[in-house]
Image (cartoon, rainbow, N blue to C red; front, side):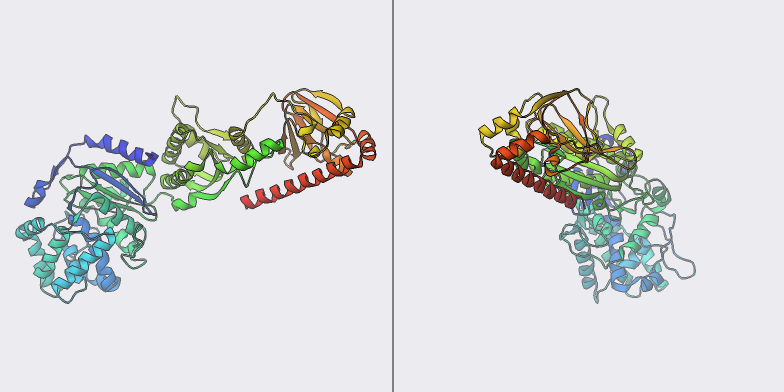
Length: 603
């Protein structure tokens, strides 16, 4: 199945593929060999699910993106206090290769420019340059979730042409920032920039940062808990060099770019994003990468200062129609059929404010249930809002499930901030979501799709559960004691609080609703009955006052048995009395069990 999020990314990729601005970096000769048309996007969720489009498998060198992960490694090895004496965290506003050092101490302004990155590389643990490199490589492997290789040709090209970086390294040595051989640290810096990754690797590395240092697929911790906030803070303010301020204002995601065409972007607790497109702007940032992140941030509401929830918080209770059936009472044969099929009605209770990742999480849960689903009911009564992108994704999912014969309906939409985005997401040629006032009505609609409904059917006394097992001769005697009464649609057959007057009603044709009044003046339906069903039966147990009102939902024909006639039959045929009272007791016990089960499902 092509998920709505996958479809969105495919459309985004197609829209931006024609963007041809920028040029492949050439200041490192080997980088000039990159294929300028490559363009890949990968988005990884916090449970490790990747969404990919385009060129996500071609390998390229990580370049300056490595700075974020080596900074994380140095933080783990040296601690934030010591590291802060060697490398600052202030934005430089300068290009990536600028010599930005604090005038008093000589410390680089931040670890995302070359000067700061060379300094942090020198601070990674290791008694020898080889041991230090092994530590750097293994740390970056942990973030990627696999062993990464080194592009020797790019490494040699960087080393052979890195004259400016050599000057920076010697300045750091002069100020005491690098204490050992600066050329050894510099060679490891060249190596870390020459590690080969693909777009998927970048997305998983970003997702590991988003997941507080735990790789979402392997489950292994790549950095100490809590350190991610230090790395992400510096990425947010310094990761895009002299474009960092505009990036934070417009896109609002911690990010890091590399002149090889890669960009990572991080939405803490939600997403990791990797993008690859080799054509970069004069500041060294991928042109298509920036455009894609701008769109993702806007359409998905990913700006770090936008209200967000954990995706899993979008979904509360999940249950089926088997544990919470509608209030419709059905004949025994139809009820048995419904018992076998009601588990295919899936209820998902949405919660809080839903962003795109919350909606994506809900859709994935639905997809997992789809093979055994007949309908989905999205219960919105605890949803306080819905982003437009989330509404679009839910609507795309609705259309996709509809094509597979699985309707998606909504119930209990209480907030205008939920309904308005849903309406806006609907295409002009589509009627949109079917919305029910409550779960009972939604459940009835769903049940009617999986069991036969004969609105014009006629049932007799033998179909009533009260007469199960009663001999035909006794049924004939009961029928002769009844009278037939017709009601028009909308008629009040019984009213709550009135004298019970001993009448029991058996529906032959039509449908009725049994309702009780609420404190606010409204009414709550407690049952919906059709042919073969009965109401008023508690009169047989001595009830003197009607506990609910009964309205005719259609033209209705009933057989009515009054208490006087029943008393005569019961005295004449004791076996009839015993059978009817036993059946009534079983029916009431079954209703009580169903009510308890329904309450438990919603608790």
